[in-house]
Image (cartoon, rainbow, N blue to C red; front, side, top):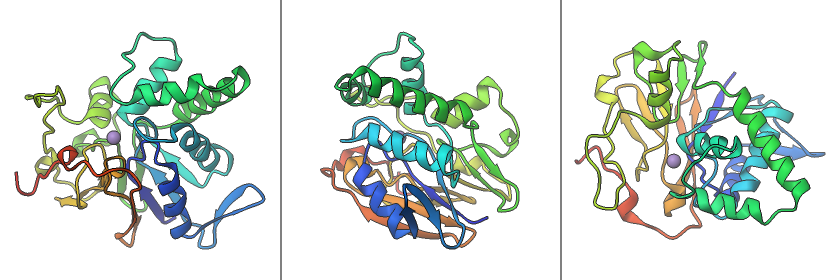
Length: 248
Ligand SMILES: [Mn+2]
């Protein structure tokens, strides 16, 4: 079945709704469907930094768990929110504070519901999604060929965060490492995690995180067609947040 893979959303609910409609998904009587029986796939990082993280959780829960026309793999921001909801001691920063502020404004019933939806979504999610027929892997920060099929701690760290950083920017953010020169398989890898201004295509991998949260675009890549669809961000443009692997 054909897939429409969507990049990092980070609470950009309006852009997500627009993109899903543009892709041909229709809501009828509270349920989503597509005339051509296509399915959506999310590369993770649903929440944090953006204006409506909780509405994104509700919509993705609806698409994945209720209507079952989407697959979702977690991103590092999802993993952190999950650990927060488990009651673990996590730092409420790097964007998590916006999601928690939204959450704390809810009454207890709504809090319980959103938490239950997110935990269900996360618990049913694979670390990455491998579609044998399309020969594609959807993984938040990418994956190396030899890791496909594995779920070790090391693989989990890689699919959530990518390669371990060796350097940091002055503001503490890690300098992202390009792992794609080491991908040498036949399997197409679609991932996000590192905001780029244009889809970054390298060795049968595509980074589709066009940094909607930093004012660029929200993007979908359709497989097997390998065509792109984008909507413009409604957020302020922050050019310093984008990595340029091609010209680095
Ligand atoms: Mn992200």
